[in-house]
Length: 348
Ligand code: SAH
Image (tube, rainbow, N blue to C red):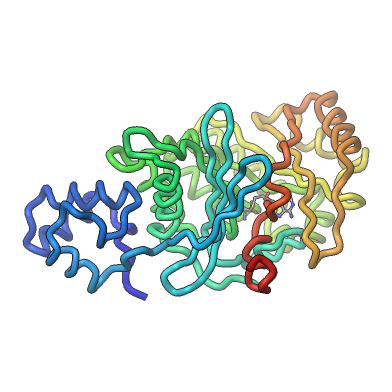
């Protein structure tokens, strides 16, 4: 695979143009073209020889929309093809306050969570910052977004992969996607979800990027959590909570816990009470999600009625909590389901 030009920040593009003996304004034209989601070969304000020179070294189209699946609720799910042929997925959801895109940070995942389809084939490779950024750029362009009027206003790093297991590229992506002059999505509109890689949660707090930190909790004791999330054997819930406090101290931002409801695993009355005990008084919110059943795994979701009962228990106990609306369920909305299906030839 060639290099990824979208890995470079604007100032790095300025240096590249200098290196090529080009005038400085070429860097602005190039940056603008890239941020509009254009292929290098289609940035027509650059001379043809310059484009050709760039194409010798860089991928023309690092992320390509291979297929689009549209759900009955208007949610779009994408299968993206990378330059080396690997597949990743993304989702685009319309809300009253703006449009949210869910992006992937790795091809596959090595975290091994039992309920998640992204990890079924293990980790294939990390995405580079420019590949993650390109996911956003091509979707913004697809919806007619420009740099003046973006169509992607919010981001969640909740596609396949564990962002804090690909730390450097994820942070570089965050810097580039929030940079002024680029697609410039506000960090406050970005949520990063982690299964709880504690040292990197602390490093992230030190980066000074005011995003929404989201932690996949999914159980209330280390032992029970370890049954569905192998990472729980490495980092304790108490260590995660300490890292969250550190995050709040550093950024002043409250944090969010994701809690996917799995029948018989994590959502009886005792679990509710334990969750209240763990989180009460903390500057946090709990997002309940009804499990999207992955057919390779033998886990079932809680009924809607019981999910609301569990929600009521948490709220009565003094927690700020909501039950997330199920979206894109008819198009394999959960992490990794689309790619896993596609790889098996089910979506063709
Ligand atoms: N690696 C990150 C991002 C994962 S995806 C993390 O672990 O947080 C975002 C959320 O969806 C996580 O909370 C993840 O645990 C959850 N999730 C994964 N598969 C799911 C499924 N089948 N049903 C419901 N939630 C799921």
